[in-house]
Length: 298
Image (cartoon, rainbow, N blue to C red; front, side, top):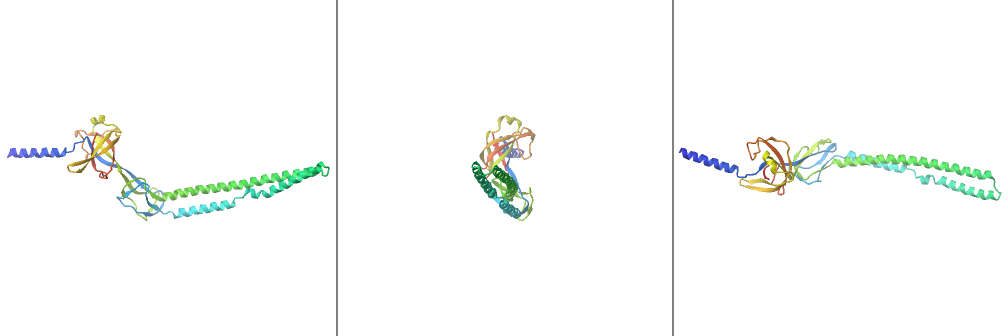
């Protein structure tokens, strides 16, 4: 009887050992994803925000907007002001056309006097007076052009300032729209539609579930077998007695040892200190989940 008990117990331990080592690999760990917390870039009421946890979102997908009525009205006000500024701008060519005509007439008169003077039918004083009148008119023209140019430049600067403000408003209006930054799955939703949000307020968390990382742990003796960029095989359990493999690439190797996480088994369980390794894996079929255990062979 005692021998039977010993035999049965030994058989049980052997089977347990076989089951535990059914899938023997170089290292194991858990899958992680690149997570992004999307925050509000504007202040106001969240007028539209229709997403739920678990939603699959595409990169660049529109998911909602913050109230932008006041910004829109401010933009319209600035555009109206710009139109008023354009109306105020003087047309220099029109403004000085009259004085240019006077100068042209004065020069014609000067030439007439010069001809008369050559025939002794006019005096030198008449010619001097004509020259003096032309100089006065030219100085008046220059002064008027300078004054009008100053006015135009001042109005242009005012218009440029308004244009910059319009660009700022347009940027703020753009930031009122909530655009999803990466393709992935919504993990957490932190606010609801119609809530008032402030700039920097977290709205939701999304993770890239297509491009995952397996954070595995190796002992020091395994360091010489791996390098960054190395191609490896990653495995997940799809049933109690079956695994599926994926191609992976080592993207990071820790340069510091750490204590073995309680949930991770290493190749040598006597090792207390291990090194973390990150392996990039493309989740082509969506079977890999964040937090799932995985194995790797180098």
